[in-house]
Image (tube, rainbow, N blue to C red; front, side, top):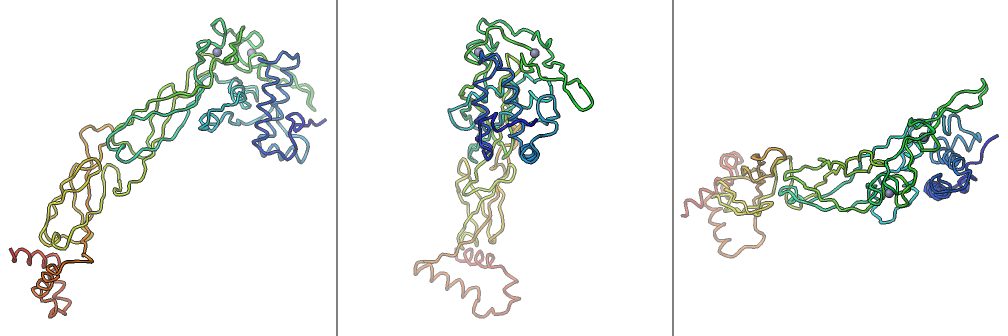
Amino acid sequence: MSKDYYAELGVARDADAETIKRAFRRKARECHPDVSDAPDAEECFKRLNEAYDVLSDPAKRDQYDRYGRVSGSGPGGAGNGNPYVDFGDIFGGGVSFDLGDLFSSFFGGVAGARGGRAVRPEGRDMSIGLTITLEEAARGVTKTITLDRLAPCPECKATGSVSGAPPATCTKCGGSGQVVGYQQTLLGPMQTRQTCPDCGGLGTTTADACEECQGSGRVIDRQQVEVEIPAGIAEGQKIRMKEMGEAGIRGAASGDLLITIGVARHERFERNGADLHVRLPISLAEAGIGATKLIDGLLEPVSVAVPAGKQTGETIRVKRAGLPIVGKPEALGDLHCHLEIIVPKKMSERAHELLRELSAEFGDDETSDADELRKQSFGDKVKDFFHGAN
Ligand SMILES: [Zn+2]
Ligand SMILES: [Zn+2]
């Protein structure tokens, strides 16, 4: 006899994934054995879990829709690990946090309650991205991030019990989180291992469950975390904050918080490791005779000595005007200035006069010979001219 999983969750047959997820959370609140006094709460939750297991998995749902049953589904079956609370649910960016997530976390989720495996009580690592500016990456910065995490319950000091009593070993499963059951198969009764209904697979129970955390020992809390970002950090590098991830169940070890750093593109500077690249426009005259330019560096002014006779596209390296390197306190990258000779669109009569004179000096009119042009670069000519004029 096939079961109606859609009716179990109270959703239409064409319900989308989000609707199914929400229906599961809502129903879970009604028949979670820890909060419901109904005598059939456990059984109810088991059925709900089985229905959700199938309908939340596209492949299983498809199989169920076609044949009215799914092979190997449900508790004791060969369910594959379906992630439970995903990171999006935890961070979400919003204040609202559905209790349903708490329940699924408490149980170790659908995955944990399936296949008769014991539930891992330790909290998971959490990931978050954080984008900083190139200046911040160069200088190092302390950022405060706000995140919603499953934190140790302050009410019960993470024990899950009102009296603060440490969790007791589950008497039903002896702490293994699993119980042995029998299933009728074509080959006769078969022994199966199922998740313990009393402890949800945790192996421990609380006598007087804390209302704040529903006995799980952890609650969703909006927390501010100070992140120290070292100078020189690169795009994609991760900062690990110990035990700032998801709290464990009833005082078990917390996971870590992993912050992946993104560095925003800068409008003037290109970064290549610890080196910086920047355009450096210079005038015709500066190209000819050289110049010392004071430019805006990333963090402070940088003096760039431009030797005479440089061409557009040539680069000048300013040592140690780049970025620091994480873990190498003395190391600094370089600044590469890419020269660009700018020909003015507008110029004074005097400037025109000088350029005409310059052109005559170069013998531009006579030098139609390409070999002659190649012999002496324009920069050299400009240099010669200005040095001669002094
Ligand atoms: Zn509590
Ligand atoms: Zn148990």
